[in-house]
Length: 238
Image 1 (cartoon, rainbow, N blue to C red):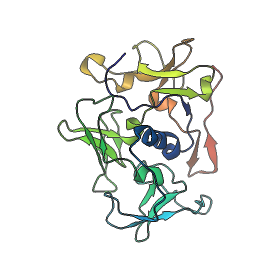
Image 2: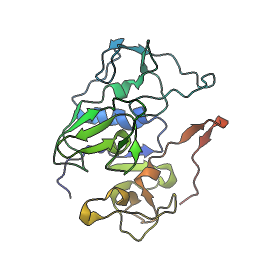
Image 3: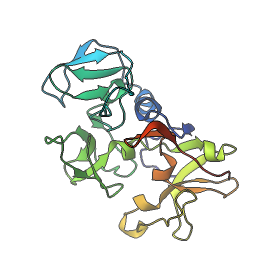
Image 4: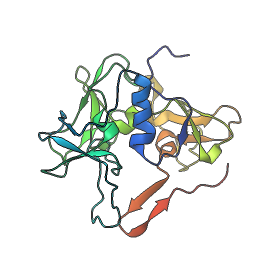
């Protein structure tokens, strides 16, 4: 067993429907020292104006543009904080993400700090998924290491509708198998510590399922500009 610190969650059911509620809130609850309160107004480091709590249901049908949380870049859901002077939005849970993370399983050497880009339309490079991302991120200033929120909150152990008879564990995949969701190879170099492309969720009981972590945490439904209905994640039985 690894002695590296790990904030992952146990037995998290996927696919998730709301990242803020399904992935971030359990992470905050596990930390133990974070209390989430419905405060009417807050000042947040990420924004120059005061934010106001809203408990009104989001009218997705009549909004021409989808309302996204500026932290996790996922659709906003009630309750959330909004700015009366601009379009800045934060999920309640995202507003309570702590300013410091003591360690992360991909970067256990140093403490990570919560950050946001000064330019709202800018991007940063995530050192975990190797993608350009926006929204909030955790950063190690000593190593110039950055990790986006999706990658930072990866559960350690999950259950999934695609294979609900067994628990799936996060681990490093051998190079040979393909992802059972997208059919693509796992990639990376464990010797160079570039392992994010090798990280998967797999069944250790029957060895019948192996998923890229990105495929495993895909949401149950998504909205698309060209369809008025939500699109549902579909998969064959395994």
